[in-house]
Amino acid sequence: MRFSLILAAASFPFAGAAHAGDFFLSTTLGYESRYVFRGVQYSESTIQPGVTVGLDGFYLTAWANLPIGDSDFAVSPEWQELDLVAGWSGALGDVATLDVGVTYYVYPNRMSGFGDVFKEDGSGLGANTVEPFIGLAFTAPLSPKLYLYHDFMFDTTTLQGSLAHSFPLAETLGFDLGGIVGYVVDDSGGTDYLYGHAAANVSYALSPSASAYIGVRYGGSDIVGGSIYDDGVAGTTDPSGFWWGIGFTAKF
Image 1 (cartoon, rainbow, N blue to C red):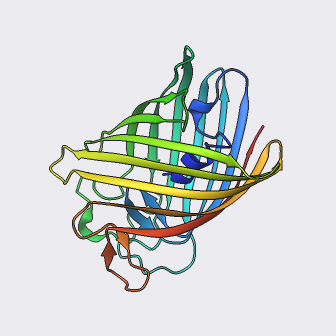
Image 2: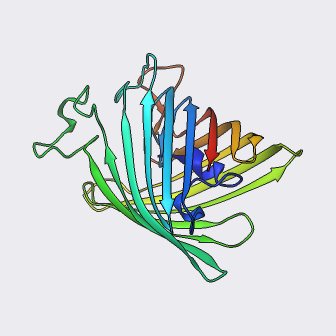
């Protein structure tokens, strides 16, 4: 979920680790031409709204992936997803910020179009799942972050690092770059794999508390056979691919 938010955090913080102390409210609304999570594409054209509220380091986030229009995507043309996050973040001196929490992934239409990929106990592709995490956001150039996740349903562990930076172009205009690299270890008998994403946004400050952005993304994985669906040939996959996004963020 939410790779675009990692990039947005370079110039416009949204993630819980960016906030500590007073009450805050952050919102986002974006469009992405693909939904790619940890190197794997799950849907095509999609709307992605989100909101975070927090107080004294504690925060709650709700984020959704809502596909729109027709799709040739082979797994599911309507991969709806709701992510509910609860966490706490706090400074570790002047060196880093600690971020700990848990994400509950909900798939409202998970029984639609998946056939026998579900197990009798309700697990399998698209099953609702819980994933705790712990991360460090370092006080250093390029805003380095390192996160560890463990998914209980699928028995996978993910280590992910990210970098992001914003370059001011004018008083209200910025150029934001970001990237992530991660590795997924599947202890359930599946395949371990490496993934990466990169993105570039042009952002425009609408006010001191609101910003709009548009940009291009590139990502994929080393999964055999590919994990990004080919725009030109339905049902075929490539190791990586491009997509684009546009959106709006605000904080109060």
